Length: 240
Image (cartoon, rainbow, N blue to C red; front, side, top):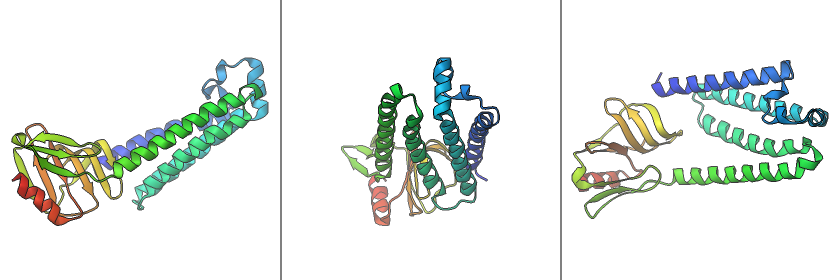
């Protein structure tokens, strides 16, 4: 089992324990003080919210969120293709819609304001996630001009060619140990990772395309590939 998978299990396990504990307390003891802002309401408002079904709707949202996260975690352990992507996308969509839907149980005087606030937050979050996803999937292009190596896009770099100390064409990508600041989907690894025998490095890898170009300076290093094998060969020749 890789270090990345071990880290994923630890983080998800801790998250599920926290969410499971909160869900249990709300269902078992009806401890609605766990709801953000509920304890700051007046006694009259709390009673009216309970009558409207507001805290009950919140705990249903929390329970369903926990179950979706648990299912995503279990399925992803079996490495079902795209299970994490589909699971977390559905989770985000469910939570955003749920935040808006819950406002129907708010106090009448605050309901319209609640719709506006949660609706705005949900819309901004949704657009931001879509925009970031599209940007992340845009291919990184490597160019060499004016004595400078440039990689465009997310996590891109600009290195003077005089700083480059090593260039190598690899038939196989070394094992990736853990993600430190980036993202890894079923067919895409982009950002900062730790690579076996190399340490910290930037990755710009799509699917299983070969070969892989390795470039290193004194302080940084990267791995990049391309669907067109000849393109990688051209990069290698130009840098060498």
